[in-house]
Amino acid sequence: MKTKLLIAFLFFSSLYSCCNSDDDHTNTNTLEGSWNLVRVTGGFAGVDDEFEPGLIVWDFNTSSTTITVTNNNTGNTIYDGLPTGTYSYNLSTTEEGEYITVENMLNGQLNISGNQMTLDDNVAADGFLLTFNKD
Image (cartoon, rainbow, N blue to C red):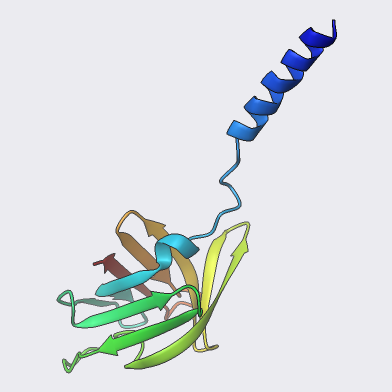
């Protein structure tokens, strides 16, 4: 009888250990690295601007929670994200999704799917949706 209980215990223990939930993970690991800003849409004026990959790059360092932005855009656009510089950021998760705050200057919902990331700061009617592609 003890052997059967031991076998049953080991069986259910192995099932439990194999079923780790990924529901509580954040995009921290996939956020790491360089992201090219390729499109900005929205805003009060109805912006829809596209950018060549490499023109505006956000490089995320998840260890130091910093973003190094290289913004070489000299075009006449209404909005192209952040100017060149290094910024600290913070991630938070709510029932609605994951959000990023960049030095209290930029807030938005963060979504990563494969090699594409969106940052939706459309909290108000004049917010923007930034679309990035990973290098």
